[in-house]
Length: 129
Image 1 (cartoon, one colour):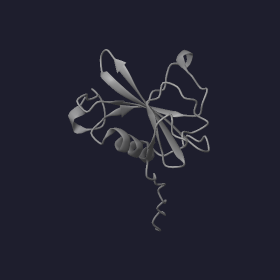
Image 2 (cartoon, rainbow, N blue to C red):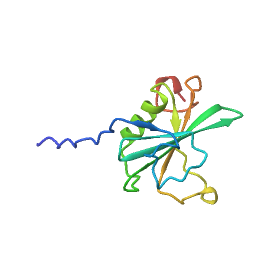
Image 3 (cartoon, rainbow, N blue to C red):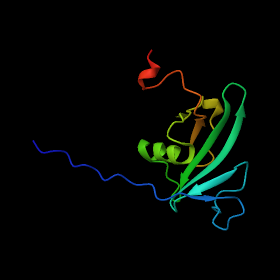
Image 4 (spheres, rainbow, N blue to C red):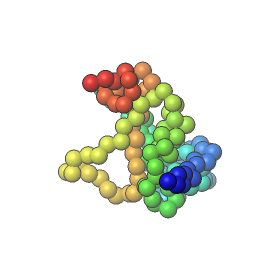
């Protein structure tokens, strides 16, 4: 039996932090309520912070690439979260109810909690059911 070929993993490049006044701010991203952005030349991550009553500040990562593709493996989203918000933060991606769906741009969204907040569910051993 032959061993399966191991796929070469796509790597995230060095992330450069941009503010809205930067000449490298992505033209396709209209300035909105974003605090700043990061890019590696292919992927753009817009960052905003939302103050919530129950969870405290939650960082919203708006993620897209230059080709308007959102077909990225989970490990790239994990690496983006880790580099921007830290390895000890937990994040969620939401698939909303159909009547709350907004699909005006081909983006992925992660909401990242502060390190002190732990989700009451998940895969880690501290989150047993």
